[in-house]
Image (cartoon, rainbow, N blue to C red; front, side):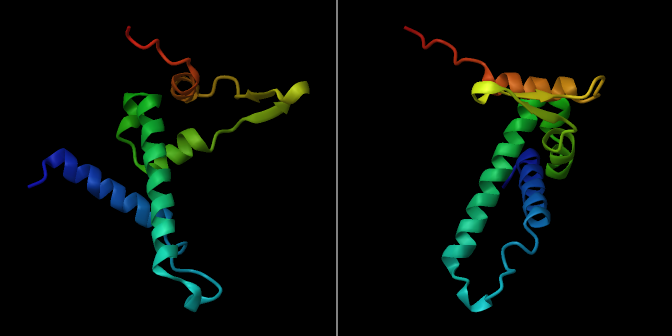
Length: 121
């Protein structure tokens, strides 16, 4: 029997994947070209995207750790920023001033871009 938390996570995952991938798995110009491999590939990509989104939410902070996928996409992925390109391939991301989700976004960004800790000897 699943524990309550495991059940909640499974239901959240199922609802997020069914909302996010609705129409993408079965819609194609030539329905007869769909194979089980195509469905498996879509499902695998959806699961990878879901796991990356959940991990980003956990890195952003405790308020985002249990948020739904749509909430994370709205708050952390679709950010109101602009890119500035500099010479030699350098790109700068300019976040808006006084953006209320800047702390959570920077927590996730810093956690993903900090150097790995030294391995114990």
